[in-house]
Length: 387
Image: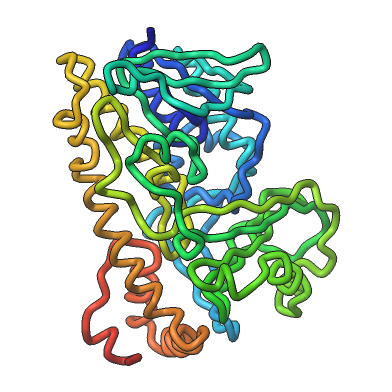
């Protein structure tokens, strides 16, 4: 019997397990494949680096700022208030780093285990059933935490959420390439498109870079992600930066949620959902790493309180979803969802006009970039300029 059983050893699950293990609790961390690389740009803002300061000692780029492009290639730079905006990492390297940190704290990592169902007792979830190379395994715990992504079977079986519809997710395709390029390694390059979605080029250090595209909402049906990806690679503006894409080290496709946090479905008796499983992905940027880590930390702190008083009911675990950091993120995501519809109206034409105005007006540019990268809420006066 473990104190806590976690399904999913990505950033949210590993962070959750580490906090619990450091507090002296026993944790089973179940992972389907520690060698799997999640298709992702791998952008890390300064908050992630603050949570894992040892990342700064690795040979990873120091990103000064993102450069944003509208669909017609108006360009804006976002200069962060911090000394550096963040960094970029290969997701496999990042996830293994965070997992190793959890294991060092005392977490029992169970690789090559596929979580497929709950162990039930008196109608309560008291553990996880997993398929391993040696057969079916059962891991019992006082609390179960589900962190195994948007396609989680456990999340559906928990009855806390339904399967996401196609219009509620994003489809992404990306690759890690190696070759000569003209990228400035102090920047990440983001390209908003005429469809709902964006593309990116993130330098990884040396000759490597991550390049990809994603779509969301109804444009998942309206466009083929593979065609959009190839179109982006051939784009003349992209070819200026990466004239010869070079060798493809790895490529992959993956969906992720984009409709915000499932605030009404984050917990129940003995169970919490965190990370992508609970919808912790920014609706505009698609950034999920910092939000995954935050949700894992808050869930762990809630679990510790429940373990201390030996009460694992929803009445205690709901402190997770009611935590100020969770509630602030819910509000921020709702605002970003509404702004997303505003920005993408008229097949990118509105955003083109907004970027054009931002290039002429420095005060307006600062306000616009604060909306993209912070929790700033746009004024009615700001919105009225583009109605």
